[in-house]
Image (tube, one colour):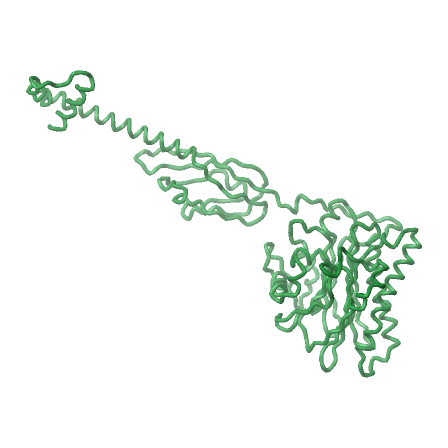
Length: 451
């Protein structure tokens, strides 16, 4: 009763009818009237309904203005995101549903709050977030949220075949092979970079190798033709093939059974490099071009197993590394230095005459002796720049171990090269692995692995 009297007192005062002392008894009788009590109950009920309606409208307004960010996805890339409503201050939502996800290759799990799948289509999409609120109200409400799916960067690049015409030094846009190489095996692949494929230009990289059965020596060459030189694709091919043919003749004329055999063969390395330069120079003259038009780097390693271990003879000019990975991937030794940093103010090529007159020319040749090794790798900068980034990392065994793990499938694409001599698909796997995506690194890629 006191509550009803208090309510009436406030109501009358608010309407300029304050209850004076002489009307206190009148107010008591008015508050006892059943009709008045019933009307006051109805008024309070209406007030509660009005407040509930206001609170609902206010909450829906807050939710409408709430920014819900769903991270961008990429076409055909596995996607997962936890829609954490508690963290967003939306813990009063229930019976959540995201309409339209399935058509984009995604799904929503209302029990876990996870959005997952592999997006199918690139674009800027609007999704309807349907929900109920944790109130007596059972209506279903909607909020629009944005989902952006980016195109796969790879799909934005064209793959225009290079044109094969008489006299244009055409060669296949990619090459791969797997063969036995003496007591070892070699898998090698060379692929035209995306920057070349996008405009239909040529693969400038090349590689070659040979096992010289009579002497037991093996040779592997890799070359990277300069993208700015119009005939570098032929320069890289000639550099590799000339070195191979040079040693085919030289080793057959040497008595390789004499003591200090590796030292004797080592003396022929400068001759192989000179022969490659001269052959390219002759080709340039015959084509009415300059040797600069054939600019190419060159790295090669000649190796043989003796009773005491392996001898490896190597040469390098340019920015392509030769890495020797010891047993159990624990040690790394570079068999050449790169023309970067203190050795050079810019790229150096086999086709630069000053290479031969430099006082550093002799330091480009190395002889390495080792008991055994797991891998010998020769690569162009299309691999090195993307996977090692800086020259200093080539000196670190941890980076080479990570590189081998990458080859073994530890990468974003899950691309794996099973380095097993019984794997007949190994060359195809290496070629596929070379399609890895690395922003800003779209040059030709060549990698030769001896194992």
